[in-house]
Image (cartoon, rainbow, N blue to C red):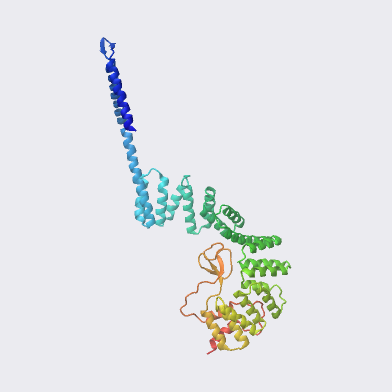
Length: 472
């Protein structure tokens, strides 16, 4: 295309030259006593040449005028490139954990770049790497003054507050961060957790609803969280004396989190206090189908305190029928049979529990020791089961899914890491012990409370331990 244009221009120039050569004409110029006579073609050529010379002079002059500005611009560009290289190398040094190298590059980037927001984050990270919390806080606070870095500054201050364990400051920062970016997952999840830690249950419920709408929290997990929040709101309603609201919230809590036996236990207790024993029994039976638990068995047995041991066994059989294959059903029936002095029935249920999933655990061994003492009074057999209790696999208990910590009672927050809704009823990992001390056997026996207070002709755990220690 360019060749064609060039050819057209050349043809046009040649045609013009031929045209003016065939028709030279004459042009005369008289100025200040000077007279110039020439042809039209020469005048046009001279005019074109003069225009080109003038354009060249103007270009040279403008170039000379722009030279200082261009030199300054190129210098700034070189400094900018060098600053960004220093910034990048500083970030790499922070990732590598080289505090000295990162600090050197941070200073160079700060000196070269005329954009403080870009270097504040690096400087703050270097301060964190050096363990200088005061300097890091100053840098992050400075970032709050600029809209483009305010969110980064909030996150840095939030992380510092969490590291110090300052939940109150972290909650305030999370609320401010949510106002800036309400769809950021870590902001919503952190705000919800901090509200739960602060027992701000209504605010936590609102935050959780927003998280579900924005699809930040999966619906099944949100449903479980809502069950625990309903449980805590039920407790608050009970403290206010609003029993009707407390019962309604307790029922909602059990429906949303059916795997948590303590929620069902509380619902049944509230119904029982209102004289609705049949509804309380149904609540326990419904919970037993999905989450059999010793506490449920105790609540169920206590719904009618006038029951005799045999009648209590029949009630336990009705409850076990809701989930007959569960290990907890076998252990509950074995304990009820022991209280009713039905040794064969108790032994049958214990054998079935031992042969099933879980095997022999301290609780099962404790029940077997009680059975041997009550039926045979044989110290050797009692000692055998107490020894097995020491080395047996652990019984299920409340274990935190986040930190692995164990808790004797269920709580909405883990007592170790303060995580919300992390405790689950499960079998913990076995602990390695060098030489287990004999007193642990007594602890294992004591850890199996009866379904009722009456233990006819059965010795307490301390007596089992004494007899085991004295036997050959």
